[in-house]
Length: 148
Image (cartoon, rainbow, N blue to C red):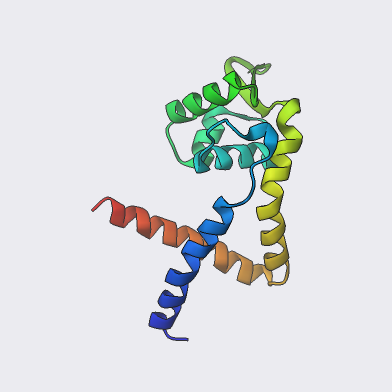
């Protein structure tokens, strides 16, 4: 496959992937919360890595801590997240998924996680690393071009 053929294939594939991801049904417990893709990423980190501080979430999502604080505040007001003092440093807050929403969030994330698991399990570790590196590089180049 030539580079031009691969580019064409990706240009046709990406909108379908995004469209399918957007059509994944939001569990009833989360409907009406006006969740955006940024919320999904934040919830995914908390789901798969467990409770984190605002700073840790900001580092992982590569956004300012104030942005995370606003998102966490909004989701906390809806009862989706909890914020508790860090016993090691009382100035910090540990953010976690509220128990009442844990099952709904796991359900929402499971469709994408299952699909990725099925696809990536069939690959070698090197092939998986190449896919992840390629997606990160694509994101970085898009960001670079968005700034020009």
